[in-house]
Length: 229
Image 1 (cartoon, rainbow, N blue to C red):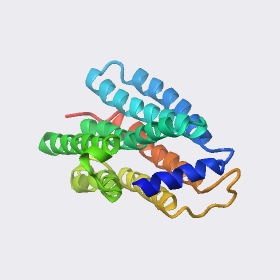
Image 2 (image 1 turned 180 degrees about the vertical axis):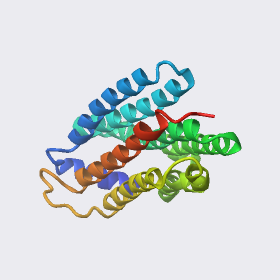
Image 3 (image 1 turned 60 degrees about the vertical axis):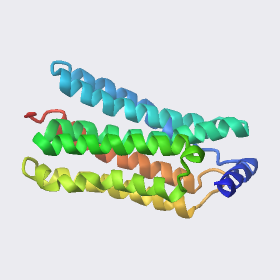
Image 4 (image 1 turned 30 degrees about the vertical axis):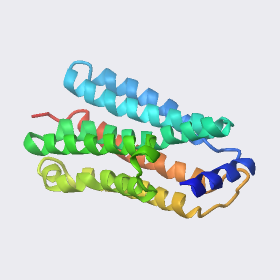
C-alpha cells in the first residue's frame, strides 16, 4: 500500500493528462439527465421509481466523485481521501446498476438473494476501501470483489432468460466485458498513447462509460417497462 501511494504521488508530481477526469464529468451530466427521464417515466410505479432512482444516483455519485478527484489538483492528504471515495463508489455503481434489473425483472427467492448478495458485497467493498489499514485488506481483495460483483448476475442467467430475450443477456455481457477490459487497461497502464493529453487512464474511463451505456440500455429497454411480479 505504501509503495502504491508513493507511485501515485510521483505520477501527480509529473503532471496528469489534460483530459484526465473530463470524460467522467460529461458522463455525470448525462447520468443526471437519464435519471430525470427514468424517474419521470416510472413516476406512477413507486417501487420501480425507487429502484431506478437508486440506479441513477449511483451513476451520478460515481461519475461526479471521479471527475472531482481526477480534475482537481489536491494536496496529498486530501488526494488520498478522494481516491478512496472514488474507488469505493465503484462498488456503489455496480450494486446500483443491478438493483433495477434484479428488482423489476426477477422474482421470488432469486430476486431477493441476488439483491441481498450484491449489496452485502458492496458494503464490504466500501468498508475495505475506506478503512484499508484498520481492516488489513490486501489490494488484490478489492479487485477480486469488483470482478465478483460485476459478473454475479451470470448466476441468475436462467432466470433472466426465462422472461427476456437473448438480446438482453448479450447487452449485459457486453457491459461486463467493457468494464473488464477497462480494468485490464487500468492495471497494465497500457495502451498509453498520448501521456500529456490522453493516456491509459482516459481509455480506462471511456471503457467504464461504455459499460455504463450498455447497462443503462438494459435498464431503459427492459427494466423500465417489464411487468414486475
